[in-house]
Image 1 (tube, rainbow, N blue to C red):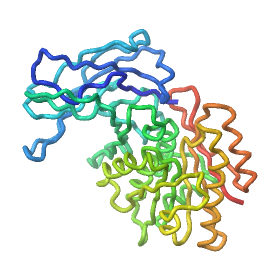
Image 2: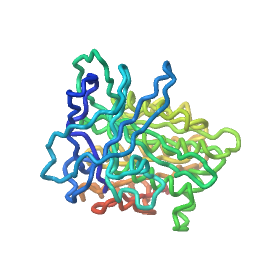
Image 3: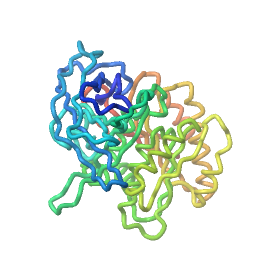
Image 4: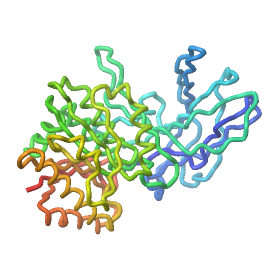
Length: 386
């Protein structure tokens, strides 16, 4: 499992230039469901990130992390005043970053690291406009987390970082969950060659997902799109032979606006393979045109993370998997996509999915695990339709 720094009380959307006005927040460190606090003490540091203004030709600036407070569960609801950025100018917008470390690297989530999750994940607010004429604005309802695909190398190559925006509400399809981060990290390390296991199943996954040949992939239950974005960036880095293929990332219609925003937010890294959002309701028997019209040679992979939280949806999920397998076989004789699942157990009843999959000819094999901060690990499973 992972722990996350978050805002129980977020900063304001606007603030005056007056130094007498406090910037009040309530930071917390919890699990992804916000049901468990980090029991250990931890120092929380803050930084301010200046939002570049293209009209004034200002560059991005991030201040040095400075200790704000020490987290303890006894302080879970304590309001804290954050010192303002120095030398504020009217009309500037700044983002507030909270982390548990003193370096820039502590402010990003290291997908490329074997020990991802050993420390709580940092959080960044939405922009705060500092103005001489502030208006009362609604509280911030979104945050951003930054993800590191590759650290700087000795050849002076810059780090590769992408951002995912999520909402602070409890809408399940609008926030990042443990399995999404765990599967994304596993994929990055698989791409970089960090997985030491040489089992046939793992070699097959690497060959399918990161081949230089065309690969067509669909994601189910995409949520914020972290897994599809990770895959799109990694496949965009390949020197592909001709058409690189497509990634169609699907969820219910309510998830699509945020999903589209996150893909657009990272367009510069999705140069060859940009995920295409589409609505797919597992309860609907007919596959949408976004699937049937985009994959003229069938599917190579079906990818999912954290789709097991509602056991009542299992029958619909299994039916959707079966339809996708049959669709793929109809496009290319006997071509069966493999299934990749990031899973974290929240209830033992979720394990019935494995038996239900076997009943329709889908056999799942565990090929990896992401431990995080301890507790329940994220499991990586691969399935094949037999």
